[in-house]
Image (cartoon, rainbow, N blue to C red; front, side, top):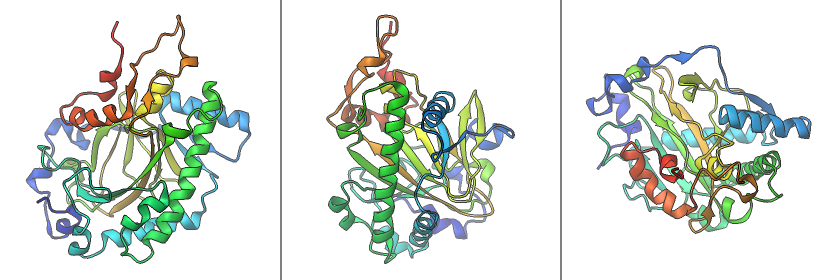
Length: 336
């Protein structure tokens, strides 16, 4: 059985061999651009300008930071405190949720696909569904004692904010109001991530280069840096802003927009100084919904770039594609 890195790293003076990446994949081998940064968007701004800014950022970067979004600073801090309390629990308490079965609803795991991958990644995560809340909350941890209360309130507010952003994207793309409602935004998954202090961060990654397979992600990254976005073949560090969400476009939104919006690759680099705990909320379609370029965005002069498929089929291939180094978006493209 895999051992949680958060349980073993405190006694590790060096990086275990199974976590050391080949030289060409190490973060120390790729330069992070020191000047560029992803756009910062104020949700409390003029509506027309706001829509334009979101679309532009989603086209050019696939990422932006969102401020004045309406989720209280107290709640954003509180949910990170509770998350850190969870990862500080004794090993046996966290182990209750540990499973290598991807179908387990509320699941603790380490790395990404520990049993199959050749090199592991410097991350533990707790992952569980959040919507509808009443159907899932009883499966969440009861320790820390405030977990269900704080994460319950947080998940509802972040879902509402996510749907608000999707409505603005809908307007910016010229789609009919409510296009992303219903089955396209059917579910919500919370991923609580912990990247412990690392003896030598130049040898490892917390998460490798990847894109998210859902609709949209809202990340609460606290005040510890580590997230990097790939822009024009250069890694751009996403510096934490107080009380801001990092928003990123996912694969399904790139496909529905017929390539107009960008699902950008990103990665996580751990630190040797402080642990990093983050909370990602993903909005996802139902397994049975058909995903395809929106009809109003395709024409004879702008043909569809992607095939039609069910989200269940896509997500069923996603882990296999990722493990084999296949771009999951490439699989969906229509070939001339």
